[in-house]
Length: 423
Image (cartoon, rainbow, N blue to C red; front, top):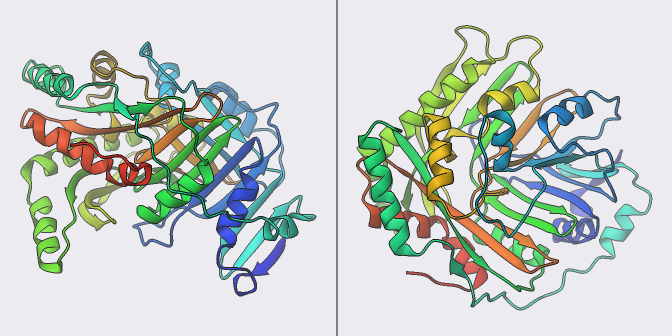
């Protein structure tokens, strides 16, 4: 390990490090933005590798891969929403312009950690610091994507909400998270520059940048999926969103409006119950608890309602066991989960890919931290396909126009960064 005190480095060192790292075929950067969050945020971690020939592509392979003897490197990677098809008898037949591998993790040959006032360089460190310091961060013009368009026209989205409300009335589901894609083709952009702009516009505690060959994820997620700390497992679903206001008094009024909104509380409680049920499948009997229900937390553009569910894991339970019990996250599906996912496949027009999936890292001792991939751009540099997705939880009380407005609210930072407006 090579520790370097932060005061000895230029202020833009993280941006230089990311631009250097993005030159590798496999790059993963996790960013907390120093934001306070219950049970902590992501570690600030950057890992790179030239290749990953033995990388796992399924949960079965992931378990075997994690059992291989390894050095102290963290494992970095992602799971797409389509991992659901390995866990349940489900399918994904909708169109996709992205074609991520279903799952991918790699062990970096060089990785950096920011903590306690220093940057730690690990692994193959020879010449790395010098290479990063020699890397320039160019001032590029703001991106503009004029051809961005919805995969699901607004009228179809509104009709889908009404149809889902009928499904709820008929007892199919209690709640369903309906998502829609906005996309463009033939786009040329600089992924590092766009991520830095997104991270500045919407700093989040579970942000991240992932490169997998020609595929890029630029993520500004406020939501944790799962974290393991020893035998303790933590999940923090988000359900409940309201726009921030410009004055303290008006902003507080909006916070209180969210806190007392019966629809939003009902959505949150349904997902908390789903998460409790998921974690109970791998937890010691009687240990599943909800230490915080309906917590309200401010972000740049929105207030979010966040609850915390935790439990003590049974002895011998590993990451794959936890994923088979809890993936995909209930906040992005609905309840009951399997029927919700079947209806999602029916109503949505595009495959989700990494949206509603997860990125994160696994420590050598088995602890891990995984986010929920929302508020994110997905980009294929080889084809120029650019995509983001947004969604909202549909209940019987949903008003279709309000649900559509909530989708655009969640997309606000993405649209600003891309120089696009919808309304």
